[in-house]
Amino acid sequence: MKLYHTILYNRPSMNPTRLVDLATAVVQNKNGQVLLLERNEKIFYKHWQFPEGKIKKTENPKHALVRELTEELGGADTTVVSKLGEFSISFRHPLGSRPQLIKLVRITYLVKISGEINLSEEHSGWGWFTASDALNLKLAPGVKEIIQII
Image (tube, rainbow, N blue to C red; front, side, top):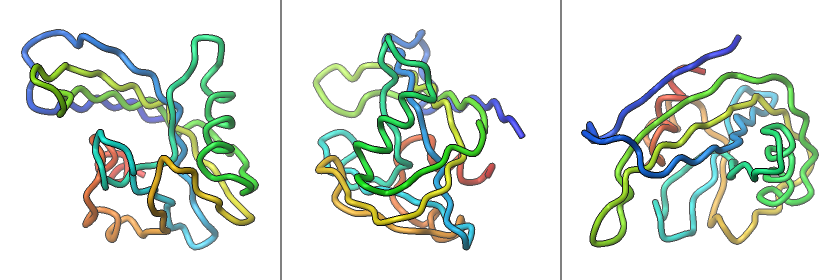
């Protein structure tokens, strides 16, 4: 199943000034719960998100995903199962005197995991959540919509 979904936050009236492509992992355990990480960085501090990261110009999305999973989850063994789709969101960057309009394109994959998670410093916590429990968390932009679809 491939999904293509566009979400618009704060109804920006101008074209995005910054485009960011992300490789995103919807990691599920054997109970069907999804893995979410709590951000420990300035932007969206203490918001929960999927394991994800920027795609470098020299990478394809799947290679970026594998790199990010290694960086963010440490020694956990991961297997990319399939591509779920691409999810686009636009929102105003929350920091600074002149908030910038950002458009994120999340190229999203279903991932299975085994082994122990060793969290990077980018995040302060992690957990396995059912969809209904995850929707009660403080989520980064666009995460709620992906959870509702999967």
